[in-house]
Length: 608
Image (cartoon, rainbow, N blue to C red; front, side):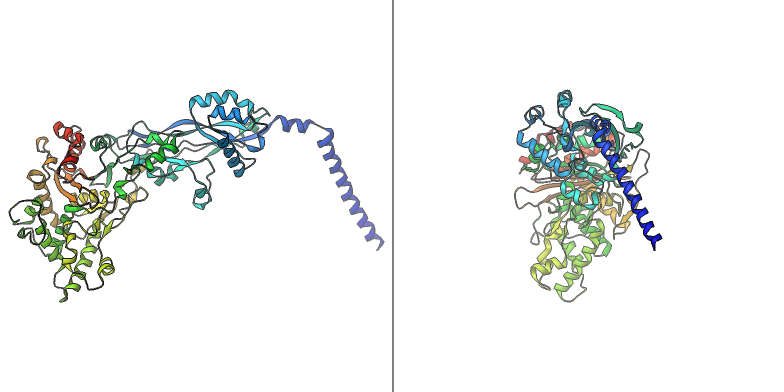
């Protein structure tokens, strides 16, 4: 028993001695020896974030679309800020005192000991002025990084822009790894390909004294990590064609989309009015953004993939004809009278004796009767049920052309458009309370239809390919030596067999040769253009002009859709723009200068 008690006292004595030793050592370090205090005051370890170079973007011919330019951010570590002359700092940065206080508050909220951005995107002049005075502002330092720059002023809606990550995004687990002040793709290609473009941050640890003077790397850089640059992207865009298309639109509202039929690659992507992407690169980004966002012209509206509520007009007659041929309700030699008691026809012409002539003359009564034959095939003795069966079958086939669905272009916020359905009409009129005469406006591309300009261009690629399309895309490959992305190599077939496209193509060639599309004619340069004009009704004002086409007729290289808002007939505005762009792309020149001047004058907006 005594042995156990003695052992207990020995153990207690050992712990007591160890405790006294540690206490004495701590007292010596903190009170007697000042060397540690001096070292702490003299040097501090400062982590410097090494922002990676964001990936570059090139056009299909190697022209640079997006580059990186140097910018400077003023960083702050709240814990290290000592007796700052706020008024002087505000004068140097040219900001109000209230703004500076709000920035301090934001920095402290993020972290008291970690650095955050106090003022971003300093100009070269601001940087020089701040750098000379930085020694008087402990806790502040300059961090160099890169921002986006554009050696041109085109393709704004497709390229998109980058901006500081929002607090809401920082709370989202999908953005794990981002920090306040980081920049992220907010729209367009920048957003869609963020994971490839962003790269990976690095960090460099430096020793600095109390005055902020650099004392060299911490432990010779043993803990530093290198940043990894983002991957470059090769786009499908032809920058020269893009610039020319924007030049022709000349501020008119509308869209132009051009596609290479054999690949689905987008050659030109124009949303007009457009803006110079360089407006989103400087410190006035916020001001410029709000100005464009509130513009009455809806400048920020991405028309090629978001303008989905406008009816397609007469170009939809081609889709009706293809499905009718597939169903066997008409043949290429079917003729119908131009009976304007059924529906008015805006073109004076003899009765079409076959499908090719009907397409050339865009005869409304002809396609009224084609659509009626397509929907009312006698599959039910009840006319209401028969129409419902016909509409359901028609809708199933029209969807195979990419209408009423997302085509899947590699840009965010694509709309799917509107295709009339049985459910829609049952909701409006009631089940078994609607028939063909209720919905006949669909026959001429009006009524409950809405397609995007991208879908129109893709429709032309389908006809050019005689029945299939590749998913439209705007990036060809990722990385300098990347291969075409596999998801864009798959063919998507329509419900209509290839043999039925021949009469449609002949009719489209006739439209341009001697019909409503003659303003797109390129006979003098030896190119046969196949096209179709359209006029989309607009209840809010003047109708919209539509023209879709592909060329050459054999072995097509380009499919295009031009949609000009409030421009009336497609023949006056949309067809000339399409013809000029086709010639520019196929011949790298423009021979019809008078037509170009007509388009640039925008006098087509005055034509009634």
